[in-house]
Length: 220
Image (tube, rainbow, N blue to C red):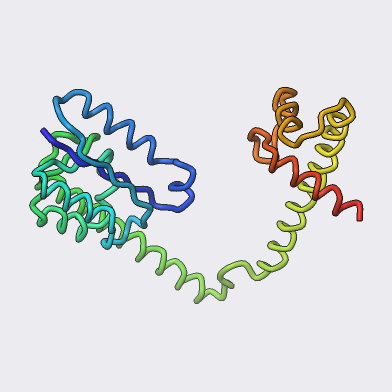
């Protein structure tokens, strides 16, 4: 048996940070371990669930067709949110399997896809109806003080950053006072002391440089 895997996440952040993709890969790996098979290729895509023009999926389908392989997908909801798309996949003639529903046939998957598409349409209709009623009642839609809220958020972020730079620069000064001079060695000392960056990560030479630069700007 031969397989081609396809993974999709619906936001750029998920794609960049790896959220979702790794979970899908783990599910596919567990499924394939139960079979005597070969994985011919893997395709990853960051795309909206409502779009049909997925370039990587088309590449996966073409490879599966050329090699007479089965397209394997981790979860049905990666595909079932758009009925037209799933019907297009069925019409391609490529066999596919979903790890969370390995025994589902094309007919049952098609029914699930139609139900999912119907739910999408109903959610859209309910949202539009709710907005229309709110508008009729004179409610101002959106945030009328969005600019003020944005300015406050920016000020808060800057304030938090300034406080962090003040504290971190003092710690860095202590390390430098002990004879540690290079940025890389300072970062290593910070990590060994259990200090964290603003995002809770490990220190690097670049992160140390940024703090020192910000501290100098604040002193000017």
